[in-house]
Length: 439
Image (cartoon, rainbow, N blue to C red; front, side):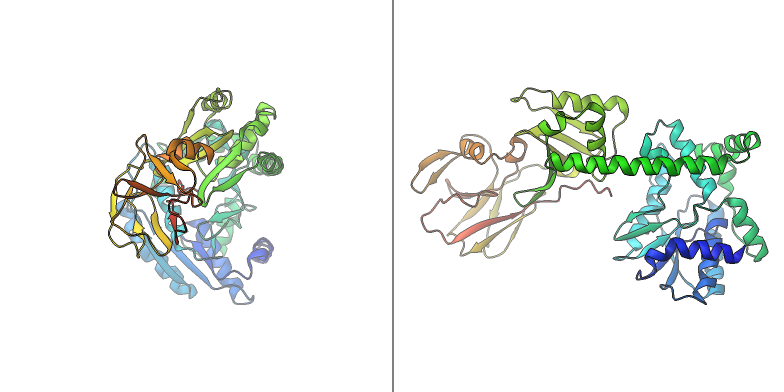
């Protein structure tokens, strides 16, 4: 059995054999203990990346205080370095979810460029995950279960034991004389996943002994279907002119008309894949917000609010604005030393290319009625200039305006406006990141 385990592990990990390091998420439980032991044995015979372990200590129960010491002893016996990451779990409606988020945030922070994090989830965990998501009304992507690999931080998360079940792991551990910790909270059916593991799955298995394998196989079929839907979405997003940048700033957008030509289900499919790295996806009932936005009048300014930001409509396109980006409050600032970049409160930074104009200079934001005296064009209303430049209305209030006393000298994002004949400077704006922090 040991040779079979090792062979299956190596076959799975073959694409990542040249990674800078393999880090094992080591809880001290059965699954991660077997994984770490297998890798340590393989490292004696195979040319593998450096192997280390990381233990996340949540501090949620007193018994867990002894686990880092247990993990350290086990790692010492294998000659493997251990990192202990202590995290603070936020209070919230779901302790399970908060602990998981804190744990994976610690894992992501620990991963360097191209490094791999290996976790010990197995086939029973996959079946449990599929059932859990089924009862929450998940779609094809959710019911495909846990991915065997996915990006995490600067590296990659790998689940090399999804093809093994817990009984196989336990037999291996006992034959190797391994010891592991048992989390007493796993016995509490107050947690949804524990209830599935302790009450629901055993009853299903008594009726259908191969249920874990068949559920996992169904998840594989759904993962394949999700891949095909992803390919379809990518083609539809290309046709919709998907782009992540607008005049040098991070501002994802899509052409609404191109999306509207698709069937309703293809629209939702394309939008799900576009939104996946940007926001937590809306539930079925919340998709009415997309229809309202899509079907609004051309001169309307509808908003579709999601958990991590909102979508706006402007100039025939759908624009994503993350929650942190939306919290901007305009504040005028003097620019005492134009030779140095100016850090704007909540709005990135400004700098000059070339010799700055004479001062004193100040950065302000739009109110109403501003005008610019342009070379050869006379005084022009700023609102009209922004209309001509097709700057979305939702962006205009945060465009930095460069003033000298009562004279408007320049506008961020509009470097072609010549306020002074032969001016030797260009105003450069580095906007804030329009990022919700998701991956």
